[in-house]
Length: 595
Image (cartoon, rainbow, N blue to C red; front, side):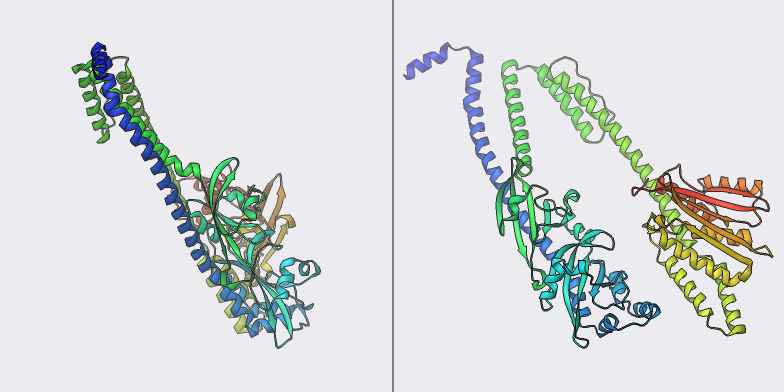
């Protein structure tokens, strides 16, 4: 037998012998090792993924527990608050008494302001003398028939967590619900503390795997996938998960294998529980091992082919071309992206050289595009920050404040009447609104409150010299707008249009919804603006350079409108000497921003 094998080998061509010897010595062992390493690598990847998902769930549970401890602590403090008991159960005689009681009990608002973990607090009570507001609400028949309300009333102070609708804004929130017993008055109410959904989602957004927090009714109260928030497990085809208990599971979703970990949790010893569900696709976990295996296989196959070519050809030309290619790759690797690889021929090495040159050119183009994009983005952010800084710096005109305060002081001194306190209160309210303004949106109604405060104060100052009218479409009150874009225009009309007139004048604000836009016009019948001055103002509004003029407020508003809604939006001015000035703008009724 051995002799026959030797004879057969001697009869084979040398090229065939080289291929057979190479296959027996290198190819077969590599294949065996590759299969073994592939299996081990997949198992290691799955084991590491399970450890990571367990750690993720524990981390989410810990951070969410810390967050939910805030509403638990607030609910405990409010349930033992004698001032709340008095405010909720007092029999009020007039509307003024109710409003005064609300102002004297600011704890709900203070808790919302101090703790970002909650978004609102409300108390449902049975007191016919109390007026509904955002904090104290009548427990009408519709509310009392809700399952969460009945569950809370049936328990003796135990906390429940439910995903319920807040009828005040039409949004669903994960809410702490607890019955509050007022022992002195022998009454009770239901306290509802809404958890900040954005804060809760931000915890999950830090996790690499898909993670959900689900209540006992399978409502998804938080998720790092925005398209699943507010839905149920059935809505996202997770019906099998609904009946699953605590622990890891192998599940199939849309015909694909997934790993899932469920953790039941009762935060703060509550009556019901929440479930933290973390899911990852088996395909996504093994994708990286598969990529490594494919890459390793590609490298091994390339090495085998190269060895075969070296054995078959054994040519200096081949080694020289490979060396030339290697040197060029090293140059590019060191950062020289301008070098060009020149290798003739139509074989694989020549094709690789051409593709490599094409890749280097694409990298150069991409780097230039990224640099230009970063430059434009940084320039836009810098301009926005400058505008916001100037806007905040020019929120309140000190000259106006000093004149208003001096007028209040003089009238208070001469007349000694209590009506001065109303103006002082409005002035304080206006100052607070200006100081608390942020970068987000506010409702038109909130902006008009600031305008109203300003006009009442100026009316107090100028007496009969100033008259004003506000004409507002009721449907526009809830439209969200940037803060402080109407009050500075009204102030401009009063200061520049009417202040120098002996007989005073009229300021008029018209707001309406038309053609899917919110249209705002502020006008006065003052001295007006000359054509030359109007042209200067328009050039100042459109100029990109900074201005240090009295119209910096108008320019800030103009630029903010353009940055928020697009270059086609901004202020429009019209004026005629002796006949007054009109300033108007329109913004679309949409929620997205231009920048």
